[in-house]
Image 1 (cartoon, rainbow, N blue to C red):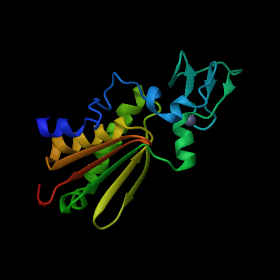
Image 2: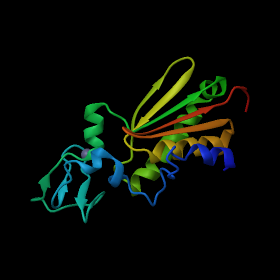
Image 3: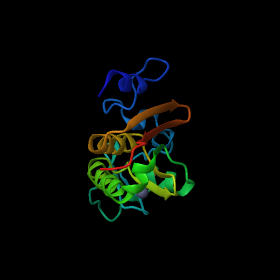
Amino acid sequence: MKPTERAKTTHPSGRRIAGRAQEDRVDDPYQRQQKPRGPAVCPKCGAAFKDGRWQWISTPTDTGHEICPACRRIEDGYPAGVLTLTGPFAIQHQDEILRLARHQEELENREHPMNRIMGIRKDESMIEITTTDIHLPRRIAETVHRAFHGRLVYRYEAEPYSLQVSWSREEAGV
Ligand SMILES: [Zn+2]
């Protein structure tokens, strides 16, 4: 990563953002609120809350039900991450880009069940991918950037907790 890009990932307060060391559940209001007091399973997606975090594990049948933060965000239509991909290249290569995005989601979600793609919207000038977390948009954008170069800009907001990532490439071609 070039220094200019690294600078953009720093919050105006100087705090480094979106690092793995900084757990989502500390900052994400959806992770903070309604944290289950004991083991629970989400009736919508089947993720289980155990040992203080949501995991893909099987649970005993008598485990209590609690809708997980990712499913609540999806219900509310309130993404934490928004990745926009613009420019002729993105439109021309949308199938490849979306394949990369889905693959990154799969890898991310295996370890972090609360990190998911919420929606994908396309029009003639852009692709917009919304996510339930702030790590996945960064991960997808960095993969697209590694594969196709272009320009990446991050904007993190602590209030409301969100990350906007824009990727663009003007020139078409391969
Ligand atoms: Zn769920």
